[in-house]
Image (cartoon, rainbow, N blue to C red):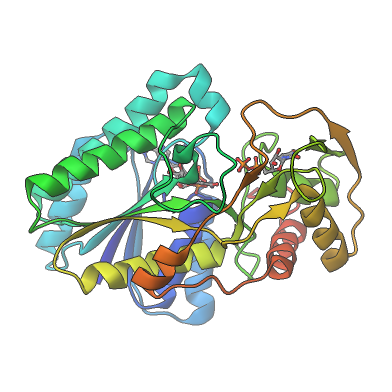
Length: 348
Ligand code: NAD
Ligand code: UDP
């Protein structure tokens, strides 16, 4: 089977790429490298050599807003008599704060880019899609765990673009129920790294998210972790989130492909999380325990737009996909730290 993986050089995409290749899929990565390094491609090639895998891997540098590039990928694969069976679409912009400053850019890349992709898929008769949606679409709410029928109420342009894309899927599916097979996966907080330490999370600039910030404090790239609030309505006063090991998340995509292959047509919106909520203090404690590194932290005021608790109800993913996350918080800390010590400055 051949998979087109847009955004495949990014944090999530690179991990999905390794799993796909390991399981014998042919993979074409399309990425503009606007938020990733081309070194990722070398790491994927190293992985293939180390494991002596026979899967075919190619990458194309290009922008999903350029329809010619998309068309050419589909045309070439048809000419090779190996048409693309499924698209996993991750290419897009993901910073909430950046989306508040540059909303049009987010609509352009995320929404127009996805529209382009769907147009090409339709033209070249590839109807199977796995999409990277986000728990951000649920908006501000402390009502946990969140199931897929939780109220959709995004509070920033980034979340709005994900909702707009999901709405496109509704319209498309309803226009021709017999053809399309779509899983829109709503991710919670993917963290950690591949156990090889070859690939991991390497945010540009100062990390906004807790886990990469914490590993950078541990390695000495950041001085001190700021804890945004110890007065939330939670067990210990710090914010609670659903941290899922990146390999468990990547596995959810393979399970989704299996699901699409065994169905005639479908449109499903599915949460991917661990199903557990962990507080900031719990994460710090577990990281210290697992790695033996002390994490200096200071308590700050609450961050704008935060909620006390957010974690997933994952019963739909378990039932529909037969998928269940297997990796513990300890494993997340072990693998995240292994990546950080092997790559103290990220991909460079
Ligand atoms: P990432 O930034 O590491 O990966 C996205 C990739 O897309 C990058 O390699 C980037 O270069 C590429 N890209 C961006 N614009 C492009 C364009 N116009 N054309 C081609 N390539 C382009 O982000 P990630 O964490 O791997 O996230 C992947 C997807 O999952 C994103 O769509 C994101 O919104 C979604 N998501 C991520 C999280 C998270 O916490 N990481 C949570 C929910 C949803
Ligand atoms: N957080 C923190 N310090 C940081 C980054 C995040 O205390 O430097 C907290 C944040 O307030 C939230 C949790 O850690 O309670 C997870 O934040 P993250 O940005 O990683 O995920 P999100 O809030 O987007 O789900």
